Image 1: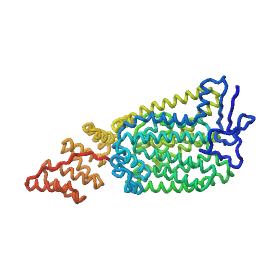
Image 2: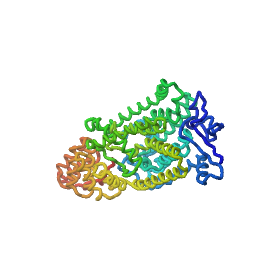
Image 3: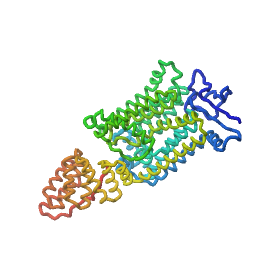
Image 4: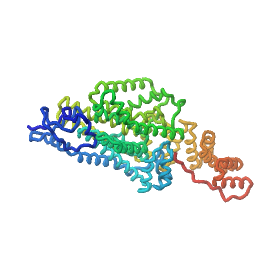
Length: 619
């Protein structure tokens, strides 16, 4: 039997530039040199210590082994298979609706700057606005382009997300197999990334375009970095900086990417071996300084943007110690949902002051244990790189700076889980090599894993069809009432024309958070539309006493004045309209209704009360 073996730990490497073969720098046709331990590659560096490629060429090999060997030599076919599987799995989102409560309205449907498409004024707005507590101009430009091409057809907007995810899957596979030479392991990582249910939120939610774009430009930054490292010069480094800037302008979560490049220097690039021990990390860190400065600038702008709308929880509301506790629990929760993706939901309520201390202690012990194990087995470099990729890329969103009321979010795991997928793929391969199992065993196991995750993905994806199905499922997962979920379900029901069903959920949301003015206002609007005037008046007056928003106060004064006109209390109605005009002296509705109130009070005939059509405004 004739067997050709490739051992990377015996590769012949140029002594000066051991890492000259980097990402995107060689094709699959490698020059081989005969050696005592098999075939040696003259220019493939020692990027994967466990890598051993066997190509069985004679008739004694099983058909399955020959198939595996043949496909290994056809990465283009494997990449096409990944793209096709991704499109087939997520293709049905083209029939999904916009989520009117959860940001799709602010990002697309009710955003006049976005919905009117690409023109100079909108482009300027994209680069100068802190709207939605973020500065991500490239994300705005992407949504504007969709509206320019497709209008407000939700299917096209959704399918662009699917295409971006497929591109990310393909790019991840390409980068991994080019940098490590391990085609099947790279394929497994990309397949897990493609089908894992944790990524459904990022792909099926139009407003999460920012995560897909940020991941895309982060992967392109890594590709450009590999090109730069092969033969460094300032022009190539400028390409790295430009790609990184686009990642930050898509979503500031990419701020940790310079640290990821340091991890890539450790594995698979192994650049540290080119430098003396004392200088290796200093030299490599200084090389990332311009990127770190970009990260610092992006972080500062993001903090300013989020504080400008009160999105950041202050220390009095959530002490730093509680944030650290929730961060530890969140890391373990992400690992658990990656390993067993059950009970996924669009929103996970923050525990605030109710986090059980045994859970905090257990999570801390688990994290410390994993970290120590990874460092102890540091010779398996993929463990160090994969684990710290997961840890570092989650730092910006782990809750140390708490933005929003969620404890965790599936969308935050889109890039971090790549590190865990690498550990799974390379770890399984190491176990197989150690036990000398037949090739069919790991192949079937990997196939079953991917199919099981794809099935779970398909089930969960069905809940993202519209807001009603999405928040109904989130309500079941939460297990206890939460005002954001209740309000989201109520808004979605109203948007679907099911106003009577929405009212109990508004009541529940208001009961859970009595001082939440916006919820009381929306319930008042709904009651007004149902003709329950006394109840609506009570809600309007409650909002007036709680709100700090002049806009909401104006709407409540006008609404309560309209009801008082209907009830015949013209004097109080006149006072309400006068108060509204103090906020906005030119408000035409308040001026018209004030005149009607004066006419009714003086006994003059009126043309009739111009009663507006009640509407439930978006967030």
